[in-house]
Image (cartoon, rainbow, N blue to C red; front, side, top):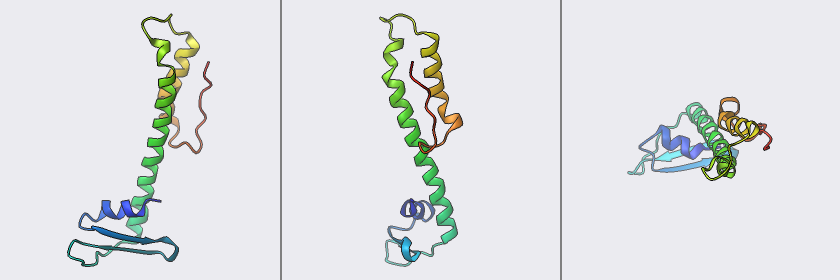
Length: 111
């Protein structure tokens, strides 16, 4: 997960971060070399929040790529889009209302 990022988000004075998940060792130091006290529960919670955001960003990136593949359907020099094409593009736009990651998304079928 994103433990280093979580520590930096939670502790703005942390400039050096060391994460050893295997041994559950999270350490941080400020600019003067002083140890920053880390709340492990807060770090875990923040890392999970950040991971959810990243997963949603990846979903949106893939959704946007699929939409871009069909942008030409709506170009002014092409015929009107079919009902199936309109429904497909709308389903892509709505995908983040139902899914939050690429892990379990069910993509609409491109007509």
